[in-house]
Amino acid sequence: MWPKKTIAAAPRGHVPLRPVPAVIGRAALGMLAMAAALGTAGAVGDTAHERLGLDGTGRQLLTAVVCCAIAVPLIWFLRRRVDRLPLDGLGLTGRAESVRAFAKGVLITAGSAAAMFGLGTAAGWVRWGALDWPRLVAYMAVNAVIALALEALPEELTLRGYAYRTLNARFRRRAAFAGTVVLFLVTPGVAGVVQAAVSALLGGPVTRPGLAPPGEDPVSYLILLTVFGSALLTARITTGSLWTAIGLHLTFLTVNRVTLYGEDRDAGWSAELTTPDAVLLVPGYLLLATALFRLTGRRIGWRERAPE
Image 1 (cartoon, rainbow, N blue to C red):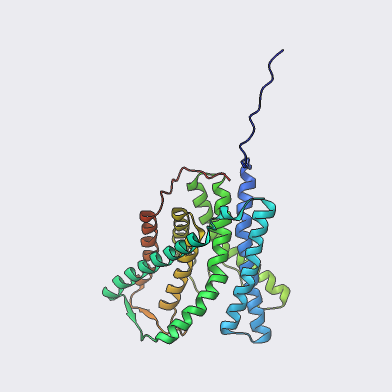
Image 2 (cartoon, rainbow, N blue to C red; image 1 turned 60 degrees about the vertical axis):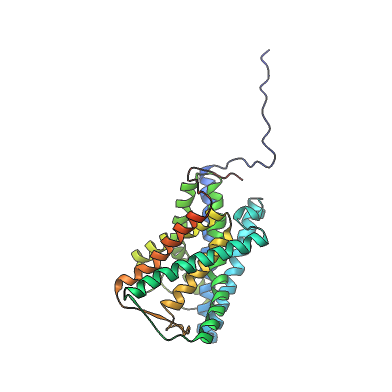
């Protein structure tokens, strides 16, 4: 008789590799969670404005709360109930480490922005308006709450958290990186479709979906999103914490809204771009921040895979 073959037991805690289509589908669910949350929140905000006259900060807060209330539970459900895996695998580090990681994201991004806008000012590309400290501080405080709940937290949790981790458990890091950036690029368009559908159901104003927000050049917008998405992933990978990406994301939104749109938003400070070339300062400081994260963080290891 032939000897029976022995089958080695899988290591304790080991999760078998899923088929490629299943992994891509799971990662896409992370993107769809964000698109559903963002589109639904936008539709609710538009309908509240149309029917109730809700505007300004109240409308923004409502939109942010709805978005976060949809995205976060969806990712919890996908990770814990569908994948049956712990949440800390998404880069949600311990409290002390999270504070340090968040601070690193804020400081590197803010420092990079200050350096690039400083160079732009010296070159005559940027002219600054009057500074109103009380108004600026109040605006930044309110904007931080709205931006964190509407964009920074849910987008990082769904994309750089769930989608990236799902892809990197099956593919090498370079493929997971590229796949996550692609999912980030299509999120606004899918969210626009969701918003139009939900607005129609609610009887609110229906906006035509597009790859970029109204008034934005689609090509320039997608290029900026690519640079931004790459910076966010670099921050998350080189520190091992999703909170670094959240800090970067929040700082990016704050800097741009104060400098580029400060006058429209009554932020207490604003910048005027004196030449079209000045728009390059934004991707410029993102690239600088990316370089600093790579210099100060762990090695990325593009060929590595991180099984669960």
